[in-house]
Length: 137
Image (cartoon, rainbow, N blue to C red; front, side):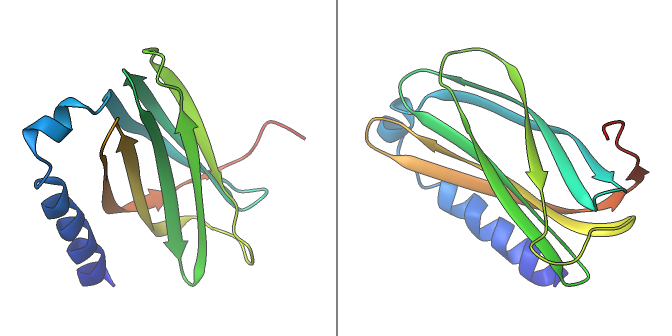
């Protein structure tokens, strides 16, 4: 599985390197950084928090997926291109089963579209999920 993950990330990185300078100039300026990945032990869901910014004409969205022992989830979030830095959350809720403390495979990425081109990229890594009790409820 790890070889497949590394191959996918490498292929996406290579594909991104073929964007022409003229096309890149039409893309909005973006920033995307995952700040935390936490497990809610009560619900078995995962919260991914990221600091994002999009400035210029175009669109941006980011996504996250996680897989652990046959349990998986995926979600995405749009980012307004208004120039403001903001923290955004993605809640990863499995369709069946629950996530638990331990190692999981996390893939995060973004898609940026300008006036005439879209590009995307993703990175994968193994993360250690630590139990965290939700204060809500």
